Each structure stands twice: as structure tokens, then as C-alpha cells.
Image 1 (cartoon, rainbow, N blue to C red):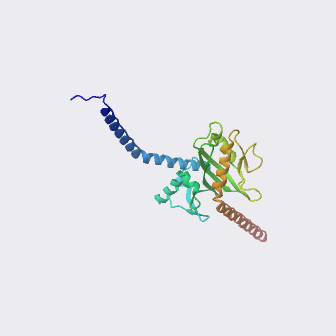
Image 2: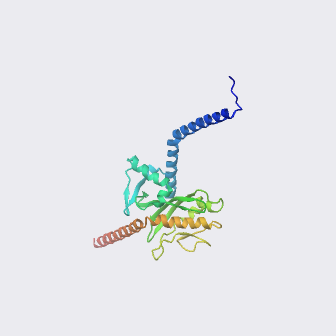
Image 3: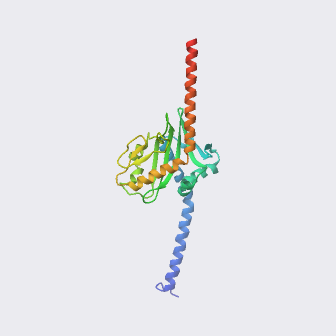
Length: 256
């Protein structure tokens, strides 16, 4: 019996069969490729963190201490505990959860030649969608200073807001001090050009994206404020202690 390939029944059955086959194939490929996709995402996160640290050529696993900010204190994550490590990177990949989190916040530490830097994740909203990144901070002489920043976006306007993802604009944040003389968070992209050590030139024509970056920095870094100020106090105490030790050594040398 010949099959009528022009009949509605044949067309419907053929379509259903093809949809099932293609759907099954896509599901198989998605499942098979997921480990590779997850590995690529993890590697991208590590590369971005290392770029923020200014150590793009170094190995994340060898030089970075992962941690969580719990109750305002840095709690190191056991690098041998794969579940805990993955949990940190999972929240980095979930921007909504990261934006809403108030405790157990991801934080990364790198110490090199006696200098300690921290990288914090940042997340916010631009003109057309999510913006996110990582900011590296270091305790300066009398303030917390940005030493590096990496930002990306979901769909900001090319040539305008999308410029936040370029190295040229990101370098403008280096050396900027977080707090003003009154102790208020002061880092921002300033329309009309930077006017002090806290401000960065805004992007001409990218006002909404710049506003989003300003809110992202203030909100994200603000969650770590108690820790950052505590680290600043500890750094000052260490400096004063070293100064006292040096004075004692000088006195002993003179007496000898």
C-alpha cells in the first residue's frame, strides 16, 4: 500500500517524529557538553579574577585564597573541598542571587611580596541589562584603593555604555580611593570628567550605563564595608607597631 506523502496525517506524523528525534539529539548534546561548558565558565571566572588582581599570567589555584565574608570576617574556603569551592563559583554565576546576598559573600585574597589584595565580585544593572565584574582593593596609607577592575555587560550600546568592558576605561579606576574625608563611599564615574582622586571620567553618551556602574560599585562594595574598614584599622596598627619597633631598635643602637 502506497503512502500518501501529501496527506495531513503523514505530514503531522513526520513532523512529530522529526521534532522528537531533533529534541532528543539536542538534549543528548546538551548533557554531554555540560561538563565542558561548566569548565569553560569556571575558567573564565578565574581569568577575570586574576585580571582584576593584575596577575593575568599567574595560576589562580596556586596564588589565590578563596573565602567567604561571614559576619564581617574572612573565612577561608578549603581548596580541597570541591563542594565548597563549587558553591562559591556557583553564586558568582548567579547574578540575581549574588545581588541579593547579604552574608557568606565570596571574596578572594592574594598576597605577594608582603602586599595583600582582595577581589570582590560586583553586580548591577546597566541601560539594557545586567552588568558585572570584579574589583581588586588594597589598603593604602590612609584609604582603601582600587588596584584593578574588570567589568562586562549583557547588552550595553556598542561605542557607548559597552565601553565599560574595555581595558581603556577599566584602567581609569586604578588608584582611585574608596572613601572621602568624611568617610563616605566616593568612587564614581563623573559626568564632565573626574574632579578628584575618587572619580573617573564618565562615558560621553553613556549616562545610564555610568549610573548603573556607580550604583553597582556602591551597593556591591558596601556589603564588604565593615571588613574593609576593619582591615584598614589592622593595617594602621601594624604600621604603628613596626614604627615603634624601629624606634626601639634605633634607641638600642645608639645606646650600644
